Length: 323
Ligand SMILES: Cc1cc2nc3c(=O)[nH]c(=O)nc-3n(C[C@H](O)[C@H](O)[C@H](O)COP(=O)(O)OP(=O)(O)OC[C@H]3O[C@@H](n4cnc5c(N)ncnc54)[C@H](O)[C@@H]3O)c2cc1C
Image: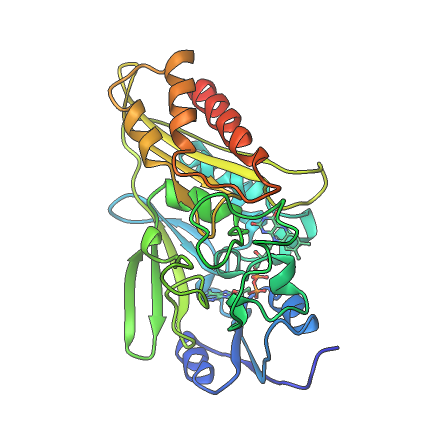
């Protein structure tokens, strides 16, 4: 049951920021994650601040100096369906198309997708786990088949967002507005791992809002893709996903970004695999070595060792498909 809460329909970003300053206030975009958390009592909310009516935060447009600007309230469905975005930033439109179900893609926004809370069943359930201020991660000894194999210190949830993986691969930038003005943040610096702060998934202060996502210009021959592996073909979160952006000069890779989803508490850059590809023309031997390197540092829990092989397969296949 949802407890009583006040509702504020913000008429501007400034109004929303002011309203978020109150204790127990939470931002509402499409509400597909927030309302579920409220219903399940994952955290207490005294005031819902809705920005859903702010037209200035919706839409996809070309930036004057090159690159693309996406408003934080743009729906996942609009991103998935944008053909001109897909022509240059395929990794993002493909990731958007893999999010949840058609209904959720129509309602859910890109800003909300990046800020959605962990899907770990202990966090969402009736457990006072480390992420809720408790002193343990129940996944360590418990049901951990869907949990992290990388970067899971003190807490082993896996970041649920498909679009986050693609945006890290694309080196996107987030525009964040707060009481003291606006700031631009590299998306890689946005996510916070549990080793740094087990209570937060990102750097946002309670009264800060992502307003825009900026994609850098794409020049030369760049190919990208997003591959997601899930337990069933209906809506489901990733067991493993891979976002890859490769820049080619002649037939060799001149720049590589390989980012993994479903395996760590934040989008995980497979830096060793990226390094291995640069300067090479990808063939099956190179793809297999990069796939092996992508799992460097993996430390599975009791029931999720299968993800190591899954990552290797997904990385190898993705590289070969782009080559
Ligand atoms: C059944 C189900 C299946 C799903 N499957 C997938 C999946 O396969 N892949 C995937 O990636 N996601 C999946 N999701 C998550 C879904 O995509 C998100 O719920 C959705 O993208 C959130 O967008 P929203 O606008 O509804 O956010 P809201 O629910 O409104 O907000 C979510 C959170 O983000 C915060 N927030 C929202 N917008 C902003 C902003 N602009 N700035 C700062 N904070 C903000 C809110 O305060 C809240 O904490 C699934 C969700 C459900 C319910």
